[in-house]
Length: 512
Figure 1: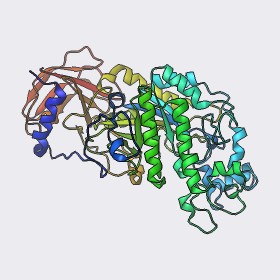
Figure 2 (figure 1 turned 90 degrees about the vertical axis):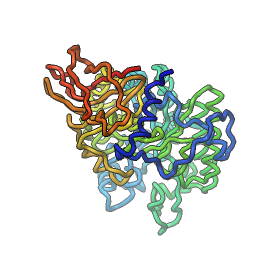
Figure 3 (figure 1 turned 45 degrees about the horizontal axis):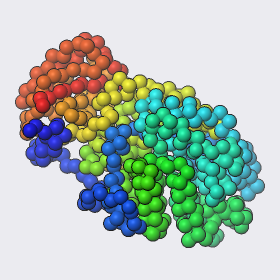
Figure 4 (figure 1 turned 30 degrees about the horizontal axis):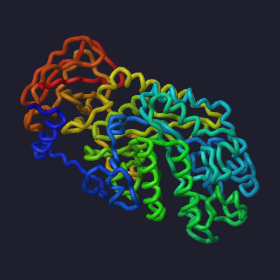
């Protein structure tokens, strides 16, 4: 009986390691696989490790969209850390706030709540944009570090139903996004919200809101304390951090719960309690849930690794994620915010997919609920490409090598953001994906008519079990492709016209 291509390629990888000189690396937190048969979870890592952290739907989705949108969108200045920086007298945000709103002790961050109206927000329109962009899951930053809940919360008065929009933003999004057939993600950054520095003179770097005397983050008002995290720690962990997660899980049934950094500062017992609660609730609802974490604060046998604005430069042996923003600056909307070129976003997606990754792409809506035109255009241009050539992306997995060409991504996580921003691919860079009996070679750029291409990864010295090729075609072209398979690789001649400006897909079918 003949094996399907992915199984053949597993053997190929093993035989080709020496020749390819490529090492598939795993995270330092890698834990051995255990049988994924768990149905009811207890609050211990051995039980939680029975969760299938990367269900098929997630592996096959490849692209999701989320958005930094909240009170920080009102001043629309600098970035989403406005609520912290507005308290430091030597920071440009402080000077901007002083000139436009007054002294932070008199006009605090919480005073932006009535100004956050979201009057033009249309969840159905947003959901359709996500579909047209090619996303398979989408959802909000449910709460950033700032203590403002983007849902109808009973835990905190600082939420979109009781202030500002007077609407259940997350509820509307869930209905519209799931209604379009997409999975729903909620992102949580609120582990940073707690006032860990609670006395004048303490290290203010460990709290999102600095503890400066006379400023709202030091207030004894119980409502303000709920926004600024100025609460007794154990109470905050259980009633606020964990309570908000349970509230969103109960009311909106997210398919993915995604965590930003400093999750490790949450006591382990509460992390376990969250995971068991979420996974048990998802099981009741027949959901294949996904938990994503950014640092080494949850085991990788029950969660997915996320790299902020960064990527692997080898094939991941487990499904992983990159979160990156469409902008070239802030994650939230700011005045004159620039965006990356659509081809750069697409090339990033292709590179990530070639290494068994998933892209979570951030967009930056305005306070009134408008998504700026330059962001919409970029999403739609990427979506148009995916409509034509998405078979090379969705439902694929990595081949024995992720690609070839001069451009290779740096290693790192937070520390190499600037390097990743500068990456530019060309038609000399090729990335591979595969599914069934098909290998896709994606040229990262424009090719010229009748251009001669050699795919070196098919060379006998690199792949010991050379596949027997049946057909070679270029997606989007009806022209017959001249090709030849030799010991040095796969030679082919491109069509007499340029097929696509952004990226060109060569489809290689092998014998079954």
